[in-house]
Image (cartoon, rainbow, N blue to C red):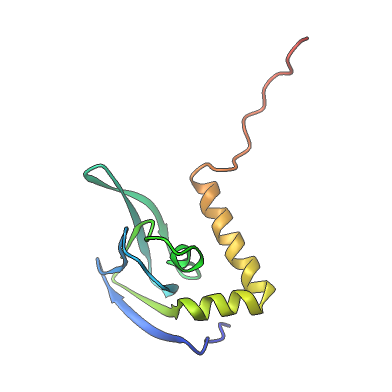
Length: 130
């Protein structure tokens, strides 16, 4: 059960429609309720697929939590996406008011870091002889 924050609206996006664009300044986040989105980052002249996300994931939270340009372009990869559009202030207020929300944001960010190999446990090696 998702309790609707006061500063949020339901939003529908259709296939290939962007939720956010890399480099743009943003002060809103999206909680994906239905459908799938794909995140891309510029790699020279190419757009490199970073991840595919589905219901329950939050998109755009980095720009809300750390005011910087968007890190990736996120587009709808299914027929449509239903999302809860959260103002930046609503997300920050929820984070500040609820340890559970803060914990959820931290877990989301840690999963993303692990997916790209940050913080991965190195392979076991034989002990060195002195």
